[in-house]
Image (tube, rainbow, N blue to C red):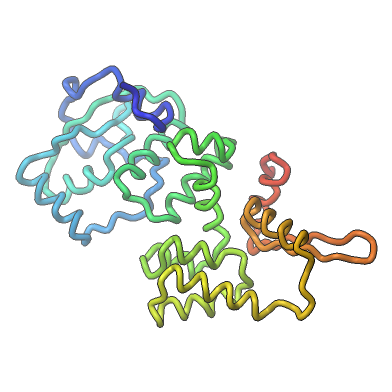
Length: 279
């Protein structure tokens, strides 16, 4: 039975064939996946060291997936197991060779495997989706279908790329969660950094952070209360665009002010509004 939500990638590898056609391949003949979304493997992490011990004692139970190159193989699935095998002192590992047609399949399958194993940080996942968006010209809807998530989830990950580098570093190192980071998106830089300090120093929960952000927004409001219609339009545009939006009424008509906080954020806004890729 076909697994839902995996796109073509992993189903294409496992739907018809079992693991019976594996062979042992020297580790030195396996090159890394050029589209691997995971940027760093924490080799000191307890779960990784447990994997090293397990492989040293029992070997690799599930073959790695590779695709043939001229005189070597390129790894498609199994980066963490391959690195653990190296640390365990293995010289060769079981692999299944599959012909991979396109680069997008390489990236898609690496993303799906890492998501299933929960091996990516939120920013690594965001960068992987951004590559599908920009390098392979997929829409957010197409990405969602390929990796088995809804479009809103993909949009939320992509918005993380708008954060300043300091908050991105906190997110990668686990000082902030994705929930914390999402509440800060769209705030002015000074407020983002100030609330970041509070989150870390006071160990604020996501709910407490949301209340703190809301309090900051209320404090900044002008005495004159904007029209409820304008407020609703602002809120809906914020949800769609993933950034700060302000409706400024004037005597005749008005202005919609859309904020962005980096060049990449501008390009992402362009693509969201126009439906076209910036080139």
